[in-house]
Length: 190
Image 1 (cartoon, helix red, strand yellow):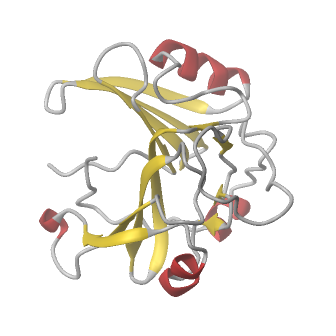
Image 2 (cartoon, helix red, strand yellow; image 1 turned 45 degrees about the vertical axis):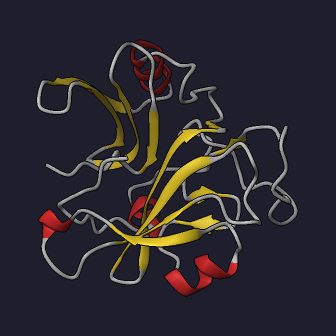
């Protein structure tokens, strides 16, 4: 995974203030019940506007750790200066087995969720299955401002869906198929 040198100050409150709704974003509402037990063969988990399962953008690191979805504390990209972001793998015993990803915390708050497998959005966008063209078309159809841009520096294409100027979901592909999905955008470390 790539890490972000610039630390976005995006919170759920900022998304709500921008008028973004989960349905309009192609993201599902929160599922009923708690975290699933980590087990092979679990269905992919649907991303919401504000997160996934019990994890919500803007929540405290302590609360996120208590969900049981996180393991393996680490640090994010050092190029943004100190304090460094804190990262965790999304493979704790409470997380669904098919999920592979990372949670990033800045200033003690959950700011970025990145996934490489085991998730999908309400509009069917999924890492490893959806092309950048399909992702861009799905979010444009849903009324988002979408930018798809090839980066020679990172050797791939970034797709960013935004509500106005507020990033909502991003994708990255080295070829045609999206390899990473991230809320609210794909982190990079230059």
